[in-house]
Length: 183
Image (tube, rainbow, N blue to C red; front, side):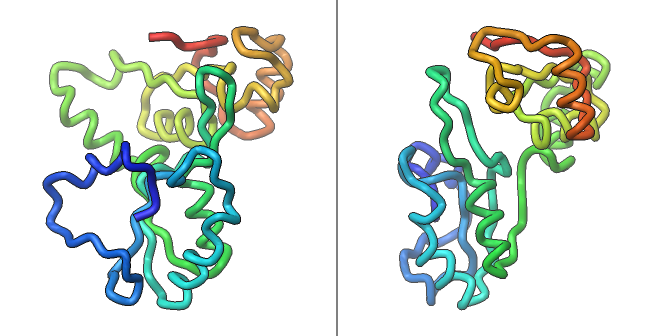
């Protein structure tokens, strides 16, 4: 298991046996870094050994980074999984942008049609792309992951032209955009 203790609840009720012994393991589960300050290099030895053992990795969060409300940018499980693939490891992804997660969520929202759902996220390649591929309207929070690329500070909106050019360059155009999202 590669992830923080706060994510361990994800495993509750599943039929598995946790192991710290890689040789006795059937797969690796990645939900994110163990510590917020970890770098990809923190996992090199573990990932190389896992790759040598041909252990598949299950990545439960394909995002590469997360931006905290204080603006701090932190490593996410998707970056660890990408690094594993570059080492030659096999990765199975769950979560955004893969359609299965949207199907599961929509099955829980039986009182609503897709036309009444708005997906909100700060990452074009996972949050916005996944929702759009599933047929949902989207709102990009520009003060998150893309803020640095758009050269804006938190709470600010880029010019419409800059935002559109950036999104078109990535090949993903959200339905709407907002500077921040507070709940």
